[in-house]
Length: 411
Image (cartoon, rainbow, N blue to C red; front, side, top):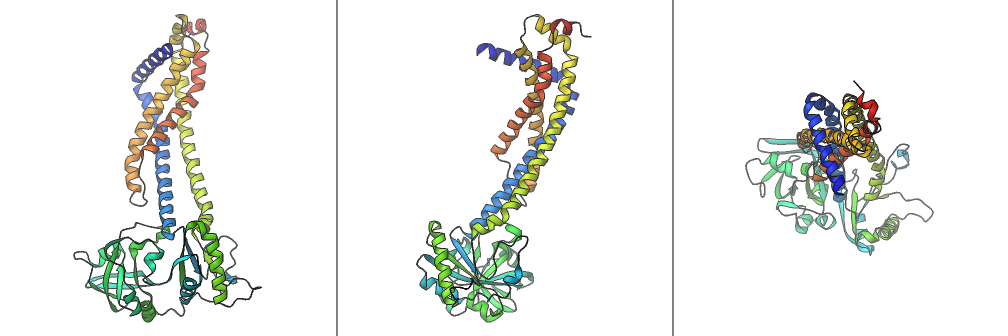
């Protein structure tokens, strides 16, 4: 072991001296590795950001929440929409039926939405998504409030004109004042702010609670109407472990409420988080495959550059190799020397690539919840070592098997 460590240290010193003598060549050689490692770290940052955002969106749907709706979520190629368009609309009374008859249900909430404009003084926002929900919403979905509280059952029952705002809407409508208790205009009617959601960040396909607001369901029904709107009845089951049994139970309750014959198919859909995961799995796989291909291509180009320069280095130092062999250097010693040189060149390129990736990761963080973590940095340097060994092995082997007499006579 001691002998191996001495050979390793000697090889490291020789490699550093060779790189120092040929600085410009070493810098040009590392450019390919810099590009490759920058691609690796940037792609890993993007993929981790996409994965984190996807998991956040899945968490917002809830692993223990079922959605009784008219349309299925899984609508890939070949989707026959005409089989669903004539289904009867889901109505809010199904939420009461499910709550009363299902044993494996913890809470239910009907949700309906529209888009309209909101205004406060001189500030105005158009195209805001307005959700009509009942006071049971926090029992179905996790609700984090930055200020105030969610509206109460009393607000529900008397169709109070109160609202809980998303963080972005609150900031835009009330940039210099506390929004709690303030009034604003929603579709021409005056509402009072009772709560503000915690900032959530951008969601899947731009959906986010930051750009939405919620009002009592009966208030929504009185102002916008629900007769020609699709209602989503969202059901939180007792636990994720019984979601399959709860799904079957809810199916039976809804079929009974709609008086569907035993031989007839369901005229409704029960959606869940897992169905969306299955639908998006090919998209995620395609993104990851393209990312891996591009980074592998960049590293291949960088590795070929390292191999080319190492072959040149072996040729230039053939006489040095002959002298070292003549004084007793073994094949393994020569092989280790040139492998170390190739790995160091790659590590220098990796260091520059990681430094270049820091501003890229910072820019990506404005779009996705991404950061250049320690794991990604260690992965980058690990790839550098593998590239150095893989593409430096052939030149190092050529140097190791050189005949000492022929190497000494080389000019």
